[in-house]
Amino acid sequence: MQKKNLLLSVFCLLTLSLLSQDIKLYRVEPPFWWTGFKNRGLQLMIYGRNISKTDVTIKSPDAKLMQVNKTENPDYLFLDILILPGNQPESFSINFTKEDKNIAIYNYELKARAPGSSGRKGFNSSDVIYLLMPDRFANGDT
Image (cartoon, rainbow, N blue to C red; front, side):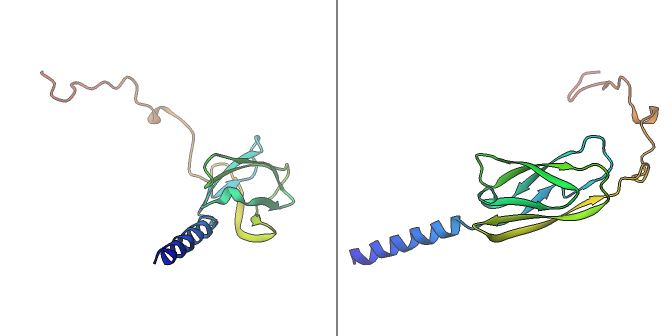
C-alpha cells in the first residue's frame, strides 16, 4: 500500500512538471502598428504561458529584432523592434521556438498610416473644459 502511494505521488509530480513546461502564446500588444512614424522603435508585449522560455526570431526585410527582454514572470516577454526606413505596409511573422521546435507563430501587421484617416481633425477649444468646479460634493450643505 505504501509503495502504491509512493508511485502515485511520483506519477503526479512528473505529470505536473510536464504540464508546467507547456508553452502557449495568448496575446501580443499592440496587435498591429503603422508605418511612417519618425520614431521607428516599437516595443511589443508578448503574453503567454511560459513564453519567456522560447527563442524569438522575426522574418521581415523591413523590421529588425533589436532585443528580447525577459522578466521575472515567465509569462511575459518584451520585444524591441526597429522598423527600417522606407518600409511599406506588410505582414511579417514572429516565430517562437524552443529546441528548434516551432511553439507559435504570430503574423504581425504594419498598416499604412494616412493623415486624417482616423477622423481626427486636431485639438481645439471644443475638446477643453476650463476650470470646471463642482458646486457641492457628496452630502454637501447648501
